[in-house]
Amino acid sequence: MKIITAIQVSPQGRLTWIFWLVLAITASTATRAHEVRPLIADLDISQPGQVTLRLSLNLEALIAEIGASHNDTDDSANVTTYRQLRRLPPEELQRQLMAFLPRLYQGARLEAAGQPLALRLSGIHIPEVGDLELARESILMLTAERPSSVTELIWSWDARFGDSVIRVTSSASDSAYSAYLRSGQPSAPIPLSGDVQPSSGKLFLNYLAVGFTHILPKGLDHILFVIGLFLLNARFKPLLWQVSAFTLAHTLTLALGIYGVIRISPAVVEPLIAASIVYVCLENLHSDRMSRWRPLVVFAFGLLHGLGFAGVLLEIGLNPSYFATGLIAFNLGVELGQLVVIGGCFLSVGLWFRDKPWYRRLITTPASILIALVGSYWFLERVIAP
Image 1 (cartoon, rainbow, N blue to C red):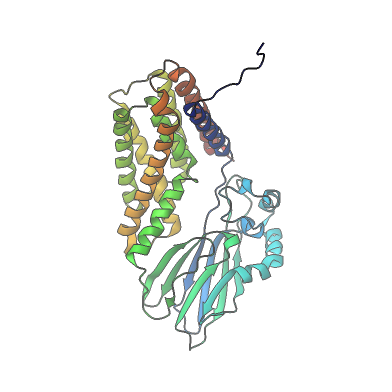
Image 2: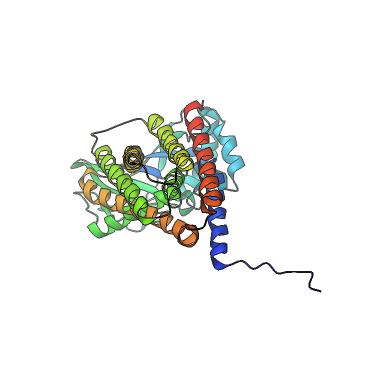
């Protein structure tokens, strides 16, 4: 007599389990997101015989060496050290910096003709301890003598320290050059007289990648919002209406935010983005059909998400001369990231199970509840955080 029966799982069933596993991991990660931000390096070459670097950075993450290999500070093996440093008052954190200084000089490199300039620390500003959920932005000033024979410089930031943004000012221009550099990637040669113009193709691909990675893997709130749109009804037409409204809206406010027409504090925008996630998921629980006002509501929420995207580009410090190219490329990268999320949802559950009688009960309802709970947690965290 056969007493053991093998359980057969169809390929479609495996995809469903993958969908739930990815959603659960995303939700659990979302509740503890402490994104690793790039270093902002402002290079001043306006003074003859000298160069000055102004580094805006998360000093605690630098000393703990939490860089580009982690999207979240909590993912690092050094997170305990990071948390201890976050609690230090400015004078004690400065002492930690002094001990770390030789490592900093190795990782921050300005090269001339293949030889590094001798950088020295000339100024420090470390804010007081504030909200421990938010990164503390410190400022380091580094200076170096510039030989008269030097005609160009190359900037690089140690790969273990993460990504960097280099922005250059000179006597000829307030914004001679800017570039977003992946961890360990050196800049193009920066001439010390006149402006350097990066190629349009390289600039486009650079900001395309920045836009994509802002969704995958860094944009957990945007990922959950897009999944919430998908969960209403796994049919192409309702999703097309919603995604089109969302794309139009965030493209509009992204452009207006970059050009300075609209500026709203992240303290306002970020809680409202969390609230938008909660709303679409609660509406999913109420109905499986797209109401007449759903695209309008999604459009309104898209305006908020666009302001969040604009904040990323403004933080990077995109040169105004390259606004059009950078804006288009970044937005396309965001769209590609959203399409990957939607495609993953369709391939894992939508195409196979949307007509099943149990689809709403086992997929839409529990997934919407889970995402709404994460969004609620975010909202409270962003509003009530000390």
